[in-house]
Image 1 (cartoon, rainbow, N blue to C red):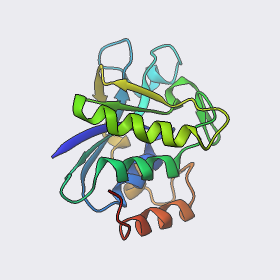
Image 2 (cartoon, rainbow, N blue to C red):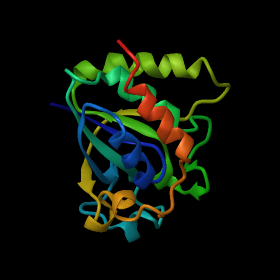
Image 3 (spheres, rainbow, N blue to C red):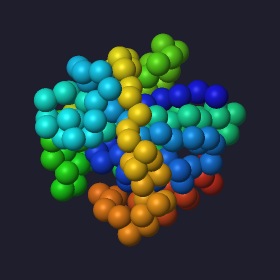
Image 4 (cartoon, rainbow, N blue to C red):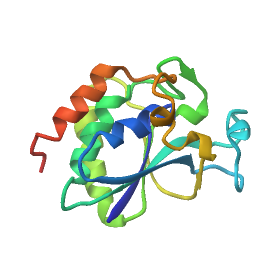
Length: 170
């Protein structure tokens, strides 16, 4: 089992995105790389903590590669904007990938370089994980519990992600 942390705007939609992928064993929504201990959602929304709404993705590398996870990630985000995704605005919605294993850095950096070539501007953070706090229970599996709940991703994105399961990405 391996773990990577990915921030892509509102964590409800991003969690559902990763749940579409074979090999993703568990997802946890939370707050990454901020400057206070044990933040609440309300505090994170004040735009004063530097936390990012993030999904902790536990995955089986024998089933899905980090490279494929990153491909899925970039299918879900707009890397050309800062502190927003869709209609959600604020520093908690800044996109970023946060790693814990140094061996993952070259794979992530290569994916970032390839993605940068597609855009005039690129604002996705790539950092080592400093800290992560689980979000409150009501944020976990939010779109499973609330299928009609708000999501910045559309149904087409989820269909494309399910198709990604059929692709070989080495």
